[in-house]
Amino acid sequence: MASNNATNNATGKDGLAEESPILTVFRKEAHETMLNRINLASAFKLTPQELRAEIENFIFDFAQERRAQLTKREQIGIAHELVNDMIGLGPLETLLEDDSISDIVVNGPHQIYVERKGMMQLASLKFRDDSHLLQIAQRIAHRVGRRVDTSSPLCDARLPDGSRVNIVVPPIALDGASISIRKFSKKALDLRTLAAHGALTEEMVQVLQIASTCGLNIVVSGGTGSGKTTLLNALSQLIDPRERIVTCEDAAELKLQQPHVVRLESRPPNIEGKGEITIRDLVKNALRMRPDRIVIGEVRGSECIDMLQAMNTGHDGSMSTIHANRAREAFIRLENMVAMSGFDLPSEIVRAQIAGAVNLIVQTERLHDGSRKITEIVEVTGINERGDIEYQHLFKFVPLGESPDHKVFGRFDAGTDQPMFLEKAIIYGLDKELLTIMKNAMGKSGGTSYDSDY
Image (cartoon, rainbow, N blue to C red; front, top):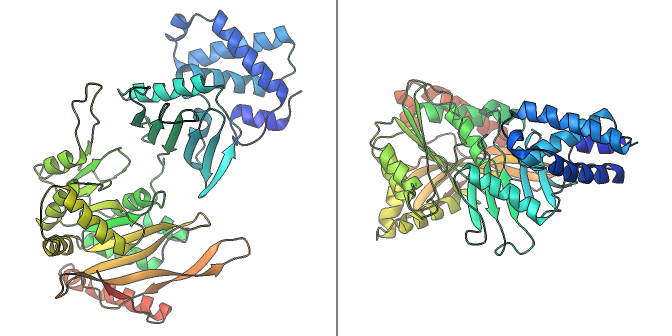
């Protein structure tokens, strides 16, 4: 009789437990026998539910033939795996169904890692061999009209649920195909939920709410996996439902709840190298669509100049994300990306355009304990006489140590009680509320001051 651990693995409960040798041998024999007996042409005409029922019946009969001492639950689990192999994504399906997993990375057929709560774990699930892994990789690419093979070994794709996928196959990948999946969250978190998890304070939530109401242009900055898209989703929930919003994304991950939303998604070139639609194309077109706000999933290159121009020409309250490890580095990244657009502009002109367009940088970070926090909220205050961007910290996370269970703890310090956007808050009748919030925050943090220039 197979162990309970084997049962858990077969049904995909945790994806981490080791299974019994009996179950491993039975699965392999069942798979080989099924391929010899089943009429594939007829099978693919069935619905997934009908196919699963047919394969379950086959597994029950096959178990009786072999007198295999497997529980009914284990047999159903194997049937589920065989269906996933035929029409799904093989062992990845079990991991995709697990809401506690945020990332899946495959390093060759026998090594699958998953990220739970910010920490990587090795899963016991494996592909049968290199050809099995390559077959699943090609299935993912085919579903989005792409191909991945020796002549085209790199591929970016998106699963039906919106999850981002990157695929690398031999000869580029030396140890077998590699698949990296950033899962699409089924539930959009709001700022207060993030605050409940310790990512920010209630005062920070209130300030960001006022900033959104006042139409401040916000750039969310952070490293890979730091929670930029999650935060952008949360910030987008603050937008007035009466406003027309146009979103531009490489992979549609934003889940805006407002009624007046137009979603645009970039498109890679086809097999002939034609038909590409870039983020820059989308941003340029969005400007012609009479948007109140433009939300760009991520700024990576030449589209940066178009985003800044949009923010500088009346599209207040626009938002985007950018890869940078510190708020100060975000300004450097923005300047470098403007240079990528092909415009030969003096640095002081570029910095002036950035300072005129961007009001807030909200910095996210994944700490070494796996937790994610908003570590900085920086307000752009202008340009100094040297042509450098000046800014001030509204809030900054100060780490103080590590608890016995290795969790990072610290405090959120306020940097000023006089935000620059107080003038805008007056227009919306929110100035007194903003001042009260910042004074309370300053009192809690002891009046710590953070000012700098770039």
